[in-house]
Length: 263
Image: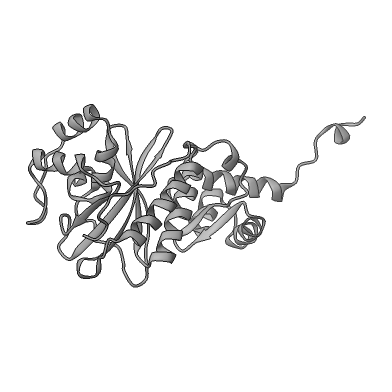
């Protein structure tokens, strides 16, 4: 066997395609094709052709703000803690909610002792709330944050509140710790923010619970048109449960969401 026969035959286009998938898989945010081209040094034309093929085969998926992993990416079956896999699953769930409810959808997560906004999918007719205060400083005033506080243990909740001031962001913000704790203790399986974060806006959130994941899925609507009823809460719970299961959670058997759905 000569030297040429001993060396493995490597297909350059396959190597380049795998590199693109690897970059998307390790990105915490969707990536535009031009960004992939800049990162890899490939020409825009080559990058677009590779991306188009990867989308067709299901290894990447195209969202309005960039590329995420597609459903055929192998780690969807095993490595659910991968940043790219987590983002792709979250994006799919938020897209489902936005399309069916017609409201901007959000997902937040509790990690390393703080609240983090993971992703947002905008609805055309009901755009996102202007996030003028970060979630790490406004959990008490948002449905996203209050839902996560509800799902914490008593010790975790008290620790978190001891490290964060309950700033009064609007006249409707609950800035008294005792009042907030009482509301959280009586949560009917979802949380609501009615102009507590921003005047004119309301949000409703439901839990997303999986191994190593404490998160919440929410939608926002103009306050005057925000009707939190059984149909809406049920839809959010269904999507959140599917996402929880996809992230590795056991089946969530929480069929009851409270006796009173209209707020």
